[in-house]
Amino acid sequence: MNILAAPTPKAWVDAACEHWGELLVDHANCEKKAASSALAMIFAYPEDQTLTTTLSRLAREELRHFEQVSQMMRRMQVNFVRQRPGRYAAGLRSALRQHEPVRKLDLMCSHALIEARSCERFQLLASRLPAPLGGFYQSLQHAEARHFELYVRLAHSAQGSGDAQQVHSRLAELAQVEAQLATSPDEELRFHSGPPTRCSVSR
Image (cartoon, rainbow, N blue to C red; front, top):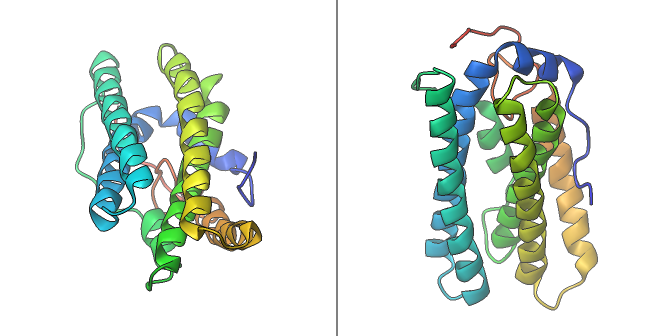
């Protein structure tokens, strides 16, 4: 299943391979944010037992990934760096509807797209990055595939007994927003940025 509206540009892949240390720093932050987002939705929708159970497990897995990335950073001698928020997540959030019940659907769709973009980029980078980072990203690709499929299922659950086509239509609409954010030029290299106009070397 491919839910992305556009592939990652080659220029982003080339920059990520050259500045993998900088990418690894942002990757650690992404894993923390993924766990935090799952927890936030547990608090937002406590009445949805399927969602809370599923996202509780997901949050634990995202935190394990954060620990693994932190270990990889130490192994490859990459230091943690405080970062400013990137435009990707904020841009995607701005496209979400704010009223319920459609906000819940939009949240599930947006997180599905984020996980799908991660899956795609892990696959693109795995064979080009130095060991052991390339192999690590290859293993994470499979986890991200499971995650985006999980969020798609939660989107259908959020729609309830409504027409499944509404989920597909909204997912396609948000995919256009996500594609613009992930492919247009960006000031800095981030895991979900567009091709960077400049890169600071952090390794």
